Image (cartoon, rainbow, N blue to C red; front, side):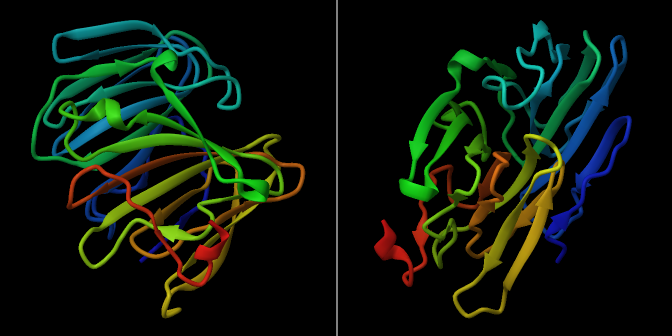
Length: 260
């Protein structure tokens, strides 16, 4: 299975983690538009969240239409605006500014709900961790998604230079529950980098990857701690989905659980 997806520049829509990837529930793409350009698509069997990374847009879906969406010119300047598009639906995005960048977060769904917008003042921020693994986690679709989405759990995390995230090392799968995840990274400034680890207790997976601006990473199982290089804060967008509800239950690596 491919885990790391290196950044590529492309106008319009680009698939990054495709719907036929080895992940069962999660797929991911990105839309890049300039002012006046449109993009239209169908969600098919995936509920979809359009997370505005930069720029201002109009989005139409079903019988709804929202204008002037988007309040930040980069991901380090404020909380997200996101539009939830249900499965089996068509939608259109029109760029109202230059440099519109939208993350297209897809989760397999069998139930169709109503579209809705999450605005920056509705994003819930949570401080997590301590010492050199302190970070800020912003829930875009978390508790507010109960009864409104099928499987999707969505958020953004901000990690300070030299710090760790997903730490102490934990995973979101056990013998009873399983969640897949993907991460999409940005750095400030853009030449920054981090180290994404990925391992299982039996070390059948035991790797470390250099991640850079615009890269993405897929996780089907295992622990996934992330470290930011000195001087370079990391932003990463994450989506999780699985087969047993929408509750995030971290399972800590027993070898490092004492750090809690």
